[in-house]
Length: 313
Image (tube, rainbow, N blue to C red):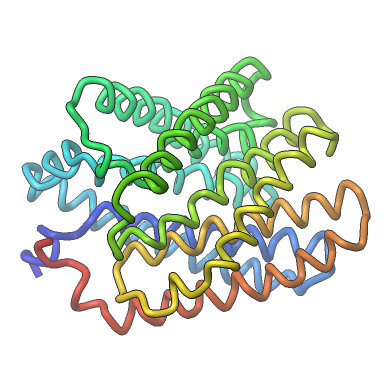
C-alpha cells in the first residue's frame, strides 16, 4: 500500500476533471433539454466522493513522501498536471453553484487562489528552466485553461476586474502555446504514444473560453460564436484522425479524452440555450452521447488496468 501511495501520480486529478465535466453536462442537459435531473444529482455525489478520495490520497502522499511530490513539481511534464488540482476545485464550484452558493464559493476561492499560484509557478518554471522542444505537449494547456474556468463560477462571487484578469491571462497564453505546440507537432518528432490522448486538450481552451466569455458578457455574440467554432473544429479534426487513437495502449493520460469532450458539449448546450438554433441542439445531443460513452470506456479501462497506475515510471 505504501509503495502504491509513493507512486500515486498527480495526473489522477484528471479523473476528477472528467467526472466533473460529465456532471455539468447532465446538469445543463436537465435544465436546457429536459433530461432527468437525478442523473446530474447522482453524478454530483459520485464526483464529490472521487474528488475527496483522490485529494485525501495525494495529501497523504505529500506528508509521507514529500520528496516524491517535490520531484513531480520539478518535472518538465508532470508540473503541468498540478493545475488539475485547482481546476478540480473550480469545477466543483460550478457543479455546486445551483445547489449551494456557500459551498460553491468555498470551492471557488480555494480553486482561484491555487490557480493563480500554479499559473505563476508554471510559467516562471518554463522561463527559468532549459526545456527542450520534446518536453512540450498539449498538457501545457492545463495550467492555462484553469484561468479561463475562474469566471464561470466566479461571476456571482468576484468583481468583473478579477474575472477579466483571469480570462485575459488564459486566452493570451492559449494563443502563445498553440503556436509553440503546432511547431512542435508539425516540425519535430511525433508525440509519444502515452501523450497522444492529450491532443484532445486542444478542444478545451476555445470551448471553455466560449462559456466563460458568455458568462462575463451576458450574450452569445460573434466572438462567442468564433470561439465555439474553433472548439468544434478541433473536435471534428480529432474525429477525422480517429485511427490515431484506436490502438493506443492504456495510460492514465487517457483521461485527457474526457474533460475536453465535456467542455465542447457544455458550450454546445450553451449555444443552443442562447440562440435556440436547432443545429446546436443536434450537436449537443450527439456530443452528450459521445462524452458519456468515452468517459464510461475510459473509466472501465482505468479499473481494468488499475494495477499499472501507481508504479514507478
